[in-house]
Amino acid sequence: MACILTLRSSTQMLGFGMAGFFTRFLVQPAAMIWPSTLINTALFSALHDHTKPDPRKVSGWKIGRYGLFLVSMTASFCWYWFPGYIAPFLSVFAWITWIKPNNVVINQLFGGWTGLSLLPMTFDWTQISGFNFSPLIAPWYAIANTLIGMVIFFWIVTSAIHYKGLFYADYLPMSDSQSYDNTGNIYNVSRILTPEFTFDAEKYKAYSPLFLSSTFTLCYGLSFAGIIAVIVHTGLFHGSDIMKRFRATGTESEDVHSRLMSRFKTVPMWWYGVITLIMIGMGLGVTLGYETHLAWWAFFVSLIISAFWFVPLGIVKASTNIDIGLNVLTEFIIGYMQPGKPMAMMLFKTYGYMSMYQGMYFSQDLKLGKYSN
Amino acid sequence: MKLPPRVTFTAQMVAGVWSSLVQIATMNWALGAIKGVCQSDQPNRYTCPNGRVFFNASVIWGVIGPQRMFSIGQIYSPLMFFWLAGLILPIVIYFGARAFPKSSIRYLNAPLIFSGAGLIPPATPLNYLSWGIVGFIFNKWIRDRWRGWWMQYNYVLSAGLDVGLVLCTILIFLTLNLTATEFPEWWGTRIAANTMDAMDTAIRVPLAEGETFGPSSW
Image 1: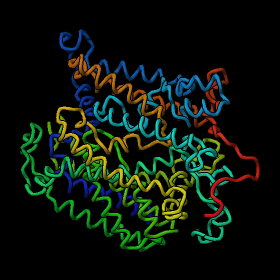
Image 2: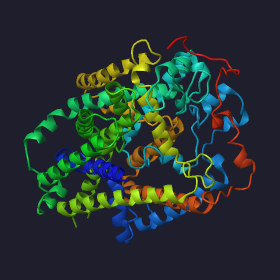
Image 3: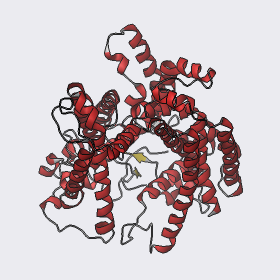
Image 4: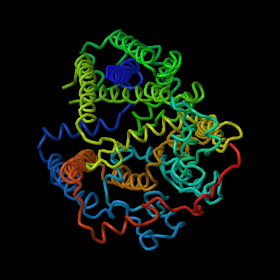
């Protein structure tokens, strides 16, 4: 209990400390928009501002912003009963698979649950906004880049892998997040564990290697590429700007928001420093005080990873509203550093990935505080 | 009205600590008070799917480990070339954009090309394509043609759609899912549920009982 409490708050507060340290790069620059905060500010101001717009400026519409909010909210609320409860076929509208429910290739190509959705149709806002948030938030160039990657990798490369039978794809589904054994059943981890929950090499040899669906396989490759690309990209396109901000401390006259903010006392860096130090102490306490199998140096490696990727991933999130995760990278690194120890992996992933992920939301809220009007 | 940074700091600090306490209290209450919680046959569907996935991934990756998956000689070792791809593509884009400054190469973004759709699986191309089509309609087509309309309404429309959906989801969950009330069966509940796609059985070479595939030693 005390262990979970310390783990939970140290993860979150480490993120908080990092968000504070990196304010200069992720919150102060005007280019760091944090698009989803625009939704909040638009909504907050609409809730207070019930005036009618000038119809000449808004293509002749007469409804106010508050009115449109109420109408769209009510419509969305009423409509979701259909895809969400009464008529689930509206959610994944893969009508070709309904005509041929037992044709393997048609289901693989046109299916919307475990297939490639060659004819993407849905009448369900959950399907549309479920993974990259509402499409009305992200700027068009971010959407276009995502679509380019999606088509190249998940339509073209995935079909090539799957129908060429690479990675034993003949025996595996096109797209799901299960792990399979060599009989095509779900991988049964308990069959390769010793009684102490560590890896048993003999049992593994007797059982099976692990197999993944075609998109899951590719997903690991793309994670490797994305995590390196974000560093190289940041260095090339934002490197000189970051260096400039790194040197110039306390200059904050970038946009109207910053000028208005300058009349307030800033939060001194040492506040964040103290929090970070306390939380590092607590994290180290959890790591060493309980049977986590995580080495003390591995704990520090996880903190370095999360601090190193904080700004590059923050820039992506702040300019496009798209999250890129460190989950695969942290799994990969701890897997090589301390193999065969599942508890250590969970902790490493929590400190390496979740602390950065939580911190990102603190940065976003700092920007919201700046925009509020 | 701007929020002073020190106010934001304090509010975040308090909220952070408080949410830790509330979450842990809720979790402990749930683990103690709900009968059969996190069992796959829990009657009110408290089956903990997220925790299960996190646990399975950790066990699988922690136990088998990347060296038995990705190291040289293992099944998935070709994927290691993607590290190289991640290094090269941004450099190509950077110099491509310098060589052809008027082309649209400068809008390309390597991290997004690799990881924008990074949640497939469990997400599917349907999620990203429908997201992209709606995004094109609003943030490109409407924004280019009816900028005034877009400035006035786009963000509140987005908020309205999201809020309506969340309220409806919570209501359906609390009233119908928790009581395990299914909608009466009809064509619309059956048609999409009984495809190979929905049942995750679309496999080209199904194995008979006792047959295996894959390498002969590992």
